Image (cartoon, rainbow, N blue to C red; front, side, top):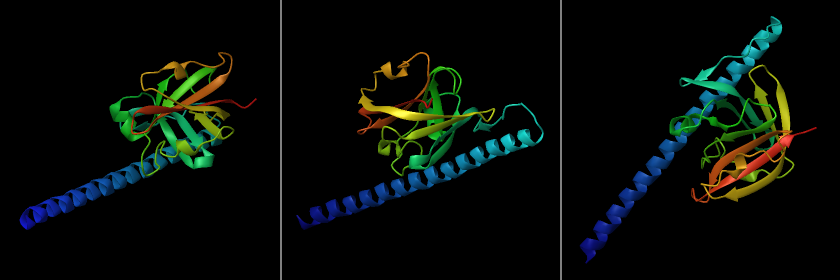
Length: 195
């Protein structure tokens, strides 16, 4: 009996070490990716600065891991600033915030982005802290920034795509989508342009 208990304890200790190692590894990889994303934002901002100094009206052109970047999302109240990749799939979701649906950034209608809810707070890991009234800034590749104010936050079933619809077809809206509750629900954050 004592031998069985020792074997079980040994297995539990090994499992705890493996789980801890996986958590640490994921944290390190996530932090490294976050640092690379900050470099992408800096690269975009440098292109904006160069274009301004030469009076160029060319858009910034940046890729991240082979995918086009379409703009920058900044949420000051939770201290995030990320490039937005032009498409959403399993690969791009690992890299950054992604365009899920909609037209161009800062155009009339609902521009929707998706991002992982990382445990270490990267990507949309801090979105659950947002409140109605908080602001989101969206910058397109021509360095045009529009400030939006959050007006609704709610959870939906993963198959519910009604959040992709604009609340008001004549305004500029953005919607943030991320996972919550162990992937059982999607946290939806909706904002509209501040008039």
